[in-house]
Image 1 (spheres, rainbow, N blue to C red):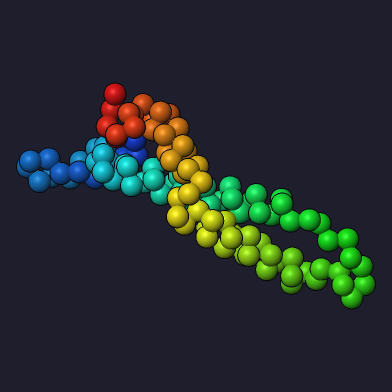
Image 2 (cartoon, rainbow, N blue to C red):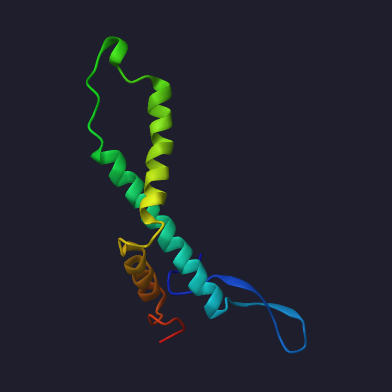
Length: 112
C-alpha cells in the first residue's frame, strides 16, 4: 500500500530503453495534483450548493417528485463545476498545497 509521501508509480525508461518501475515525472505529478485538487473543489462546492438549498416542505401536488430529487443532484454537480471553472475561490490552490505538503514536496514541485 502506498503512503501519501510516495508519488504514484509509472513505467519509465532507463538509458538502455528497458522499462522499469519508477517515479512519476514532476510535471505529470503536478498535473495530477492540480486535477485532483480541482475535482475535490468542485465536489465540495456541489455539496455546499446541496446543503444551501432549503428543504421542500410542500405537500400534495406541490411536493418535490422523485424525478426532481434525482435531477437536483445533477444540477448541484453542474453548479459546483461551473462555480470552480474560473479558479476564483482559491480552494483548489490550497488543496494542491496541502497535497504537496503531504507528499513532502515544495510548492514548485519536486522533493524538498
